[in-house]
Length: 226
Image (cartoon, rainbow, N blue to C red):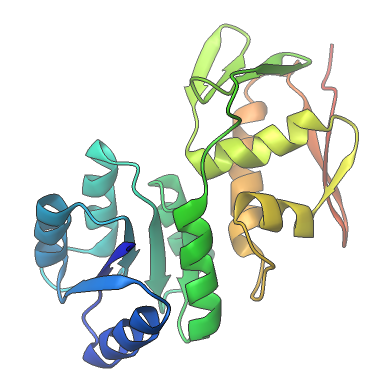
């Protein structure tokens, strides 16, 4: 049974999540503040963490940072904060997904299942190359020129899809289905933020490929400058 740690200080949210997740076959534990959440995570090593950002004693981002120092367990941030800066901060620290309150419990359960079952990369190691960039599926590294970049797993998977189909449009639906693992119900800002972060990395090398936006459809990777 999948064990989910809920780190949330609103009792009503905790109670609703515990009931909904139990009905879906999940085993849950809850912590009502950041320090308690981190302590329970270290003691119990859950399979997935649902993490609020606005927590007593220790902010959610600090909890996420501490988790990522020694674990790649899936973390889904659930927060009333919906500003782009908050979403970017959580994703850059390694969150797998970001859900804003209020949310549909059905959607959240789908995202939890998707985050829990995703594995990174292919079974076999391969190196993908385009222009001045190469992507190693074994080490999860992006090489630009002589510089290696360690990528968070979702960022890696997004770039991997683009590099597997150079010059071809990858639709939003394809990204969300293959990287996040289910038909998307809410907005697509999580995908957009990952694309922005990848673009910033690629922009450091003029020979690297570029990501083009195909409005209303998706994204395409094309050769950079020579």
